[in-house]
Image (tube, rainbow, N blue to C red; front, side, top):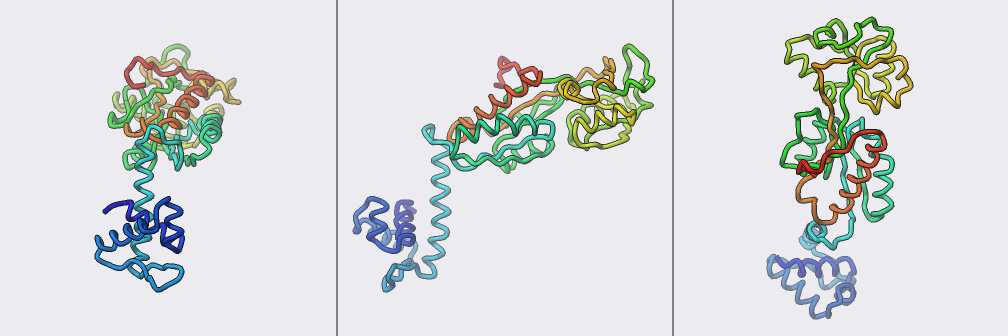
Length: 312
């Protein structure tokens, strides 16, 4: 099928005449007529009720018109995606985990709205494993994710390291725990205050305990770093946090960081997207979002990733 024939037919239906369609497409009337006839010949059906004024489609022609509009829109989107000269337009679907929502929805989002006014940005919040699954199914275009050290995201994605923070085991100062270094076995009498399953910090401590065949007991599943730290400060259980979250917390003076050499772990922040998005209409906004989010993370004290690792 010649898409130019389809374009001519769609223009006739939308303008109501051969003359108006020719004006829209900068063609002659005879040129529009030939293209419509060519499409009818290829499909083997009449598309236009030529006795009506303005011109109207036949019942089959209405179906061809509806499907033709979708075909032409897909062709335009394909050209936009692969053309280096294409302006950023359409929709950019981003995924962020809860711990990065505040960082991603401040200056990074403002930059996209200001610098790419034709671009519509849609944000989806979910845990990192869910975001990677959505990215693999093409439900989103890119995702910022947080994963424990030693657990890199799938290599089928384009990977950009944005930052890293150590994971801190914390407890209330009122909790009578020994000073100095502690082993993971010393923590087994305590219960944990953590996020629901899917959180990278929870996965990291669970794997560390299971590797030593130690029990893992969760006292409270609480959403959000500040709520967790408030519960830890009240002695409900011990928890895991990051230096930046602890520094911002209103409860930091009631909490102490435990020295647990056996749990020498951290969390890396990555931006992931399909390799095809490195070019085309979404390449520039993706790069801008990445740089802006990296700037915000640096301002929060989260060390930037190492570009020399070959993943930038």
